[in-house]
Amino acid sequence: MPVQNPLFPVFIKLETLRVLLVGGGNVGLEKLAAILRSSPATAVTVVSLTFLPALRALAARHPAVRLHVGPYADTFLEGADLVFCATDDPALHRRVVAAAHALRLLVNVADTPPLCDFYLSSVVQKGALKVAVSTNGQSPTVAKRLRAVLEQALPDELDDVLQKMPAIRKQLAGDFAAKVKALDAVTAGLAGGPGYVAPATRRWRALAVGALLATGVLAAARWGPQAPKPTDEPPAAS
Image 1 (spheres, rainbow, N blue to C red):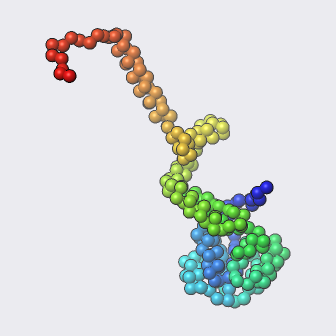
Image 2: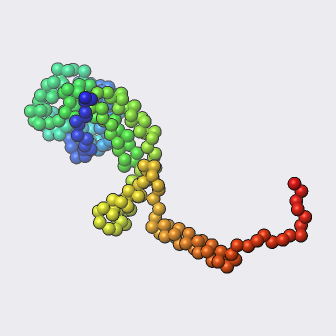
Image 3: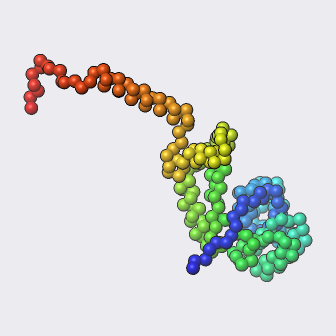
């Protein structure tokens, strides 16, 4: 039987939390960039003996990021809500995880799924729409490939649709079931179904079709079937 993915997907308001990131090298830069790409105002404390220039430059563009030059100490966990380990020192990672778990903190450890309480997903973003892809830590490469496929498949116009949905929702009448049906009709085109037609447009089309049918019936009743009129023109040459 294939292994299922038991992870529970959530979207966290990270900008309301405090993050501790241990590591200032390439992996630390990757983690910090991922955090700030989704939640640019997040308060992040980064602890490392050294920092890449690119990481320093990224931190300089985000006032809520603080860099602490020096060794890690368990006291950095005080006040943290989430912890990221991103060094090349497995022993340090195990120490951080043990201390964090003692404080009931969740930890993400780079490239070590068994030590992780949560994983970072590959993310596709189109304005307000955000889609996260998880392989349960089995293959980040596959997750990145799927992200690329979704980025191509999802049109940029989706954000325009999402921006209009609150206004559309406010205008819908009826009970919850009626609103769900109406919203399904509005968004049917996104799934390849028939596009939404406004009620006013639907009424106008019905009146127009009715008028055309009535005109046809009256014309048929007035003129009836008619024989072709004779003509004095000579028959056309074959």
